[in-house]
Amino acid sequence: MSVEVKFDNLHNEIQRELKKSNESVLIAVAWITFRLYADIFKELINKGVKIEILCTNSSPNKKQIKIIEKLRSYGIEIRLCEMPTYTNHMHHKFAVIDNSVILNGSFNWSENAKKSFENLTIIKNETEIVNLFNQEFEKIKILDRKAIKSLQAKEKCKEKFCDGELANILIFQSSPLEMTYEIWGDVIRCCSVCGEDSYTTVVSGVQDTGLYSFFMKDELDLDEEGSILFDQEKDLYLIGYSQHGVVIHGIGFTCRELWGKNEESVFTKIVWKNKFVANAVRHRYESDFGVVYE
Ligand SMILES: [Zn+2]
Image (tube, rainbow, N blue to C red):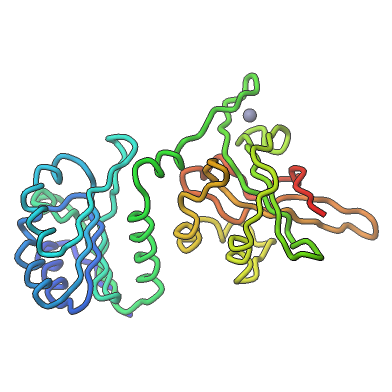
């Protein structure tokens, strides 16, 4: 692996790396001055390189629709990502070249950024990092404005004097039914403040064996605290996941703990949550929320 950090001539550094491409270029950069890169993009397309671009749907990009259309006519996929409000942005500034080189930093690929203080890190031959950036790119590609909005939406708790927020959590029992190997769960709506003390069951009797095996494939460690949340791969799989029209913000499993001979306590361990509800969903609840199928 090699890592370099650059602070000067960033536009030239990016051009130099792009020109070396032979296979594919993924670009997720908030603002791009397309004419600065148009010749290189054309050169790459002629070499057979596949180019995909995500940028933000704000006026500096929208104003360039003529050149964007022209680049699209060469076969470049360009998407102007729309967010729920004008103050949210697809704000990344990264590129993945030939599945092996990462460009990432503060630098927008714009005329303006050339006059600012910016940084650019160039990472080469680091497969795991490449995978993470690829997954983030794919995730943004899947999400449209409506999907992002439903993931961001949090209702206020209806309890008196509570200013908590409600999130929808799909909770499965931790092991399949003995005879049928089916896994069942409920969707509960739970407040960030009230927690297990006040919840409603929104959908009962959810069965999704595919989802269950997705979580169980790497032997879910139910004792591990927090580290499996915000996993890129899980995000990509679950983004926009809904049950009976209810968007799921988090997923958990019920667990049992034995204390001595006859003492037993139940709790729920959260194994995934969407980043937009980071503060509204806990890691663990001291309840099984009545999710018991036998
Ligand atoms: Zn509440």
